[in-house]
Image (cartoon, rainbow, N blue to C red):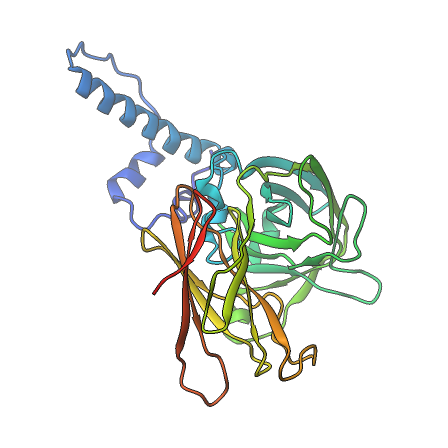
Length: 356
């Protein structure tokens, strides 16, 4: 009789009572259930206990099933950048479960979200042979005759800006945190067709990672995956502003979506570094500093005396946010950082004001 590997069975759990592990080895026995009278509160507690026991049992007997139970937005909660607060908006992050396989792996698009400007996509790799679990991490590599990762949206690859997947072992499978794909053109509604392909995978063992070693090719079999993704733009807000200025710095527009909050500033150009900015919500949630999506002005687009236009990007505000305060700082090399301006944007009435 095949025995249960207790190490594998409870992988990922910090501590398990040894008696519980011992019971897992023993055959199940049926005993008559005594009649018990319980209160409504007791019934609720008993129901929760039964549900918990069933989940543990499912994990023990059918680990692949237990691991596939969807928790929409769970992968996105690992983010600390764009898209981090998207799970807080009901119905935005989609649970997909779209899969494709070759002779070695099955790839699954577990969750995704498109706000019309970006696609955020989480992937999972399931080895079809347990021997393929020896690697701690897997990533795509570009070879001369095998592009590691390719992606198209509505049949177009040109203009896309995207990250490549990096998978980390999570027990019986490999997981990739959400990747960001910037669309070449905004999509206001409808659906987008996403087609992705993994052609070459390189893997590294934990020993190789610890020693800073290079990976080794583990698969050259293509994995092609396609699915339709609805554009969730119902929470997107965009406003133009006039007359919101302080000391030569004007806030000319702002946008808000579950994945990103932006403000556009105009001011007299002086240095290629531009200005720096930080944003915080009325509830004290830090949306971080400017992500510098568009870089600085070192490409010579402006000359002294010109009016610079700079769009500052931040993490999207959580659902229910009333206002966001943006603080603008100097950003010149060798100069002490100084606060130059402060603006408050009201997401409910769409107005921006100067904070004195």
